[in-house]
Length: 227
Image 1 (cartoon, helix red, strand yellow):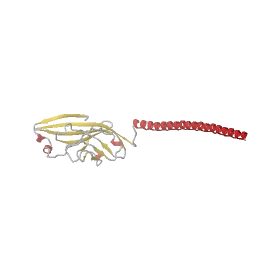
Image 2 (cartoon, rainbow, N blue to C red):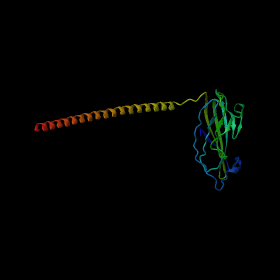
Image 3 (cartoon, rainbow, N blue to C red):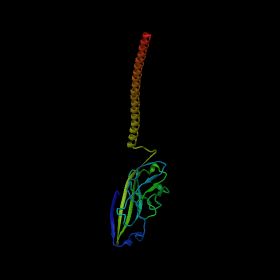
């Protein structure tokens, strides 16, 4: 995560909220791999946008509970104010009924704390912070960790394409045109070779035909002389 540190170590697991639910159950389903991906930073006005926040637990075998809180700072910089708390609790009139949970489901051991921002407006431009507080229970100890991710969101009227995408498309068209020109040159070259071979063959056949008629003519003259 962007920032992560441990700030509490207790020898009484009951002091961690939800620690009773951390005991492993027989046949408990294993979790898949977790990959941290940064959130996108450009949203299109009037559409929906996913505020991404993935913070993986380093040791999968350690049971935990977690909570997620989202904060927003308007540009120019003022101060961060809380806008969302896991789960489905929206704070502040600007985001009222426009934030929905899109993170981990059916688990209190949250790896994904993403939310969806609906009906994006230009007023949503600013800095966003996702904070994940995780309570880990290891034997008789409770370890509480704190992690946060920060990014700046820009709202545009219509989507813009990155330079790499434009360059890739231009190179694709250049390659297609180049291959077509090369194929055309190859076709002209092959046609020239075939045409030249045809002319040579016709000339050879003409020579052989002429020689044949000359031989027949000589035979006829010899026959007429003998007669």
